[in-house]
Length: 124
Image (tube, rainbow, N blue to C red):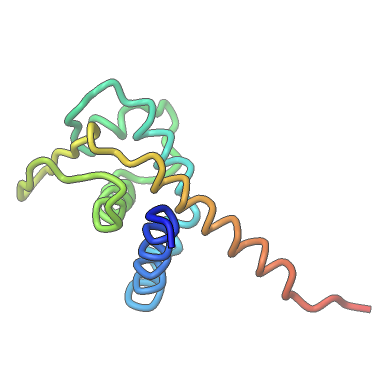
């Protein structure tokens, strides 16, 4: 098994655990993964707070609290790292952002969506 396949299965296992233990967080991540990717990849900061990342949108697709949950979930899935933990504001280490892992996450969600479409009954 290649290291890429191993990392993919590890991410898959982590996502399954997230789905089983925190289905709302899983659904939020599934729905907003591309918005999260946009924020992480367009940031010009190396160590950003959620507020700094959130401010990139003129018309944000979600509330700030939800974005904080997405960032925390991404850190738990090892897509990015938390640089400093603070009671009122974490800083995220965007130099450690793993775009390959983010691509794997998107691929898993795409595969799940395709599987769901293929298993839905057809009315005749």
